[in-house]
Length: 281
Image (cartoon, rainbow, N blue to C red):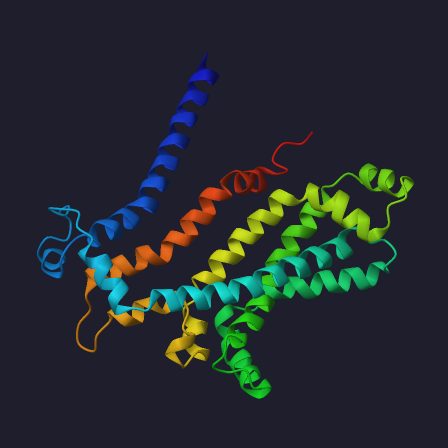
């Protein structure tokens, strides 16, 4: 009886903490959405009050102030090159580290440690060396200046998570595939990839969000306005002496729309990747 009461209280506390976390997460997004329907005067005088009417004046102004079509185009160009390369490289590297037994264990451990180092060095410490490297190879102020470093920055996390996913695949499946005459490439594409698909989709989303929302590095290496990405749209709404927060909020909502669409489309796969391995069979 006492144990049931204790479990009930623990369950209520857990639900309360989850609801509190969700509220704290959604409140800034809701406030920004409401600001996108308010004028600059309303934001300054009544920042907490809901808008009197839901007019799309700020959205029309944001589309006129910033060339969103060009910004989206540049961002999707980066995505179409960087994301497939990151996924292909990470999947192949993780498979080799986890499952290819023909490689000497010391070599595999060395590569595993090499990718682990990517978690140790902070992002800010890599900005100047990468900026210098981009200048030396002659790709500064081009989309390749963003694409190539993003692939390198995404690799450590992607490889480490995929190695864990590959390690959880039962060896019996691998042995059965070998008995059926599968080659290593066939085993990789037909047996292993379907088993780690939830984790791969989760990594795809994380890398998509990281590349799409990158502001600091893109602002550093992209000088020409016609090469700017959608994450730099906020620059167009900031004046020298003032900032129109209504236009900026509307612009941020426009930046978030593709991310929300991708999350909704792949939501089930994301949850499967998060919960993968939570229950031991």
